[in-house]
Length: 160
Image (cartoon, rainbow, N blue to C red):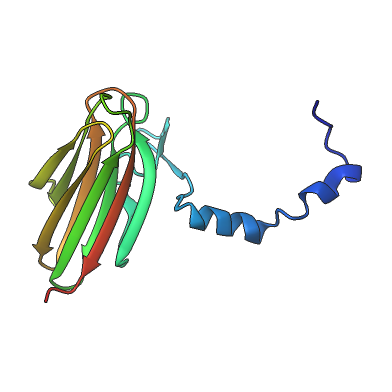
């Protein structure tokens, strides 16, 4: 049975300070969900659902995030900017059960043109490795309709 929250039981929650909660989110590689208005100004959409409002990897040598894509969640877009020639590695793990739905991820040029794509079947992982020139690039993760959980990992390093 749950107790109502009152001043008498606040001590139970004292260990969960803002700092400890923040550290827990960092350790879990969670990104806070942000919303913006759609172009018509009437509806909200989640950050990451379009190329015009992507999750930003900019300037990081590594990045990871877990999320879902599909009919209810939409596609996810990630943007990264390279200030010079870099080797990049993108891996996406389909966290759905073995025979579950697949998902696709694509490495895109700034203009939306496809550089490379991969299909990731249930409970598998695929990678894209490329050497890219200075510029802005996108990663698009999408499902054929069904909701699919995934984990994305991004690495960037100087070429040898």
